[in-house]
Image 1 (cartoon, rainbow, N blue to C red):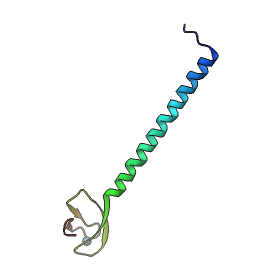
Image 2 (image 1 turned 90 degrees about the vertical axis):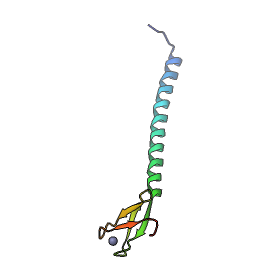
Image 3 (image 1 turned 30 degrees about the horizontal axis):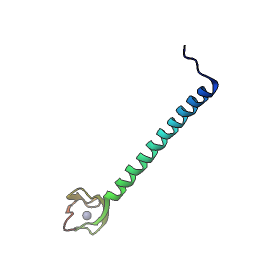
Image 4 (image 1 turned 180 degrees about the horizontal axis):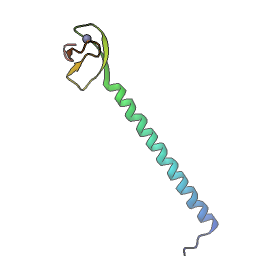
Length: 77
Ligand SMILES: [Zn+2]
């Protein structure tokens, strides 16, 4: 069996605990940044048919109006 002193055992305990906390912090930071990117992608647009504004995804070229269901071209709108 491996013999370790009390100070070495305490150091190993602290190292594992701090590594666990660091991993949790890095995961929460990564999740919050990916959520922020999704918000930036969305924009508002006014429908050409019913003139109601709605939120759409910026990466789509043609979007469907959430009020009347008509298709709108992103470039002209
Ligand atoms: Zn519409």
